[in-house]
Length: 110
Length: 119
Image (cartoon, rainbow over the protein chains, first blue to last red):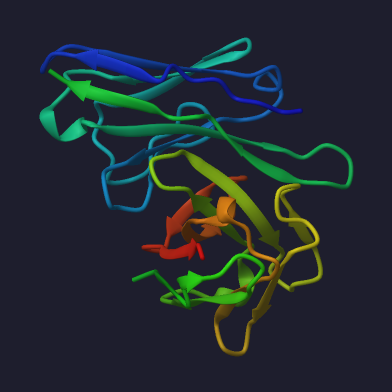
């Protein structure tokens, strides 16, 4: 089955760089997407197609891909970036299509 | 402004049924694929179901196949999720989400509606 694996938690101090990884065997063939979710709120897209940033998302958010791992990088972390982050991809094999999420990573700003 | 507003959540007994609705506005609803995504309390996101823009193609996660039915009414700009034979593990916030034109991802989400399955 198609799975995406994320670390449960990442902690950084303000101003440092946070890196959140997402691993999956299908990632070399499928794009990955990243969402930020703050408590009590709906998820918000922060990166699409591995490394593209939607309008309105700060430049400190970036994405990259290498083999079976994609990485969300937050440069110069701010207190407001504390949230849960989810990677997502899609399995479009054959006649079936499904969306897959990683388990989520809680980013703590110390 | 794109808006997705879910409704219909609530408390239901195991084995019961519930119908969720998602009212869309601010975009041409009939042009977009839509999904339902859920999140159990304190847990991660889980894809539930997909429907194409016309409603002719539908997919379900294995966890809900045979129990849930997704549908849409493009004349009413509305998305639905009929949930039958509900189980405790279906307890979650249910989000409707719009699939972007440019890829298999969600560019807009509703605020969610809570479904609690408990006796």
